Length: 155
Image 1 (cartoon, rainbow, N blue to C red):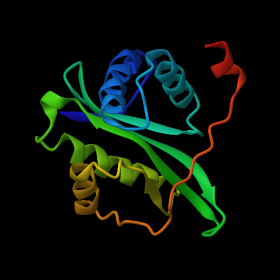
Image 2: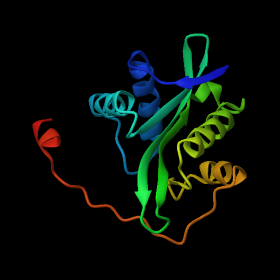
Image 3: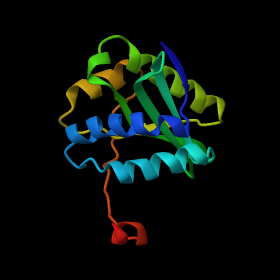
């Protein structure tokens, strides 16, 4: 298994992984076209962030997606771990740990001083996984406001 930066050629496999992820999350529903558009934006605009993939030969086993932003509290660049998923048949073999460790190293090398992520409240396995890798529960509460935009209105 090796870790590499995702390319446009990986988008079909990544869309499949996101379908798995969003099918298990309470707030999201898989939408392959929307996922394709989002992945393409990240892959073709590295200033937005990066997507790392774990591959065995030509098979994509998992992905981690980190987006860049700036924290005014820290006065520094930070990252949002937007998506992380390992194919069900590849879970339990260390793929997720390798992806996360590599993602943390790349974020740190690109000047990020913090990584923030969201996980479902009911996903205890994911919470244990992230805690094992040094993440801590924040006292911040996420709130969301969905905004209509021209893209969603035309879908």
